[in-house]
Image (cartoon, rainbow, N blue to C red; front, side, top):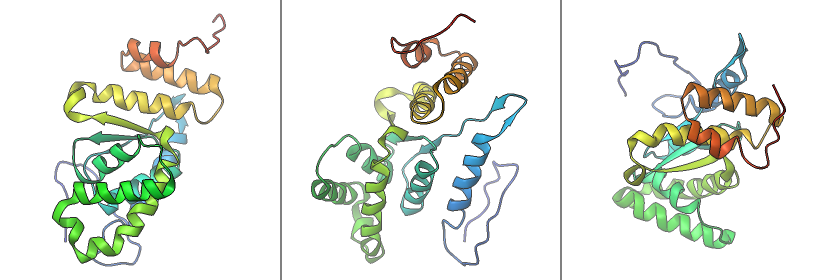
Length: 206
């Protein structure tokens, strides 16, 4: 059993009929986040980003559902376990067999004693398959090296993730306007210069 975190003011509780299981909320959460990101009230669009810190199988299911809904993910490399596994393998361009072996090696390395447990072993195939599926959507993954990049640059990583995701879907003129609003709102002229005002972008007067 888990306690509610008193740092929050509101809770949305999900009941799918199971008992004592984590992750019942994940599919609904992904669907809800997707719908929130599509809302457009008073010309204000809400951007949604999944930030991955450490994590186990429930977190893997969260990432899997997020990328399948087109939600960008920022992976905090150096935070441990699943985040480190995905951060490491996402940069590899090996064959399926090699990636399977690489994922297995990283799971063993990053999960330590937990990897050797019967429960983990029974779920290892599910881990590997879902990581493989997530890697097919690399354009939605942004790796943030927590120890190297510094906490102050996490906002840049989140913004960059939104920029990358916008390039993969939707009319470019609409997404660029949204990105420009984000860059202005976050006061990130450097990100705008890197991702928006590039040589391939054609901007008209006005």
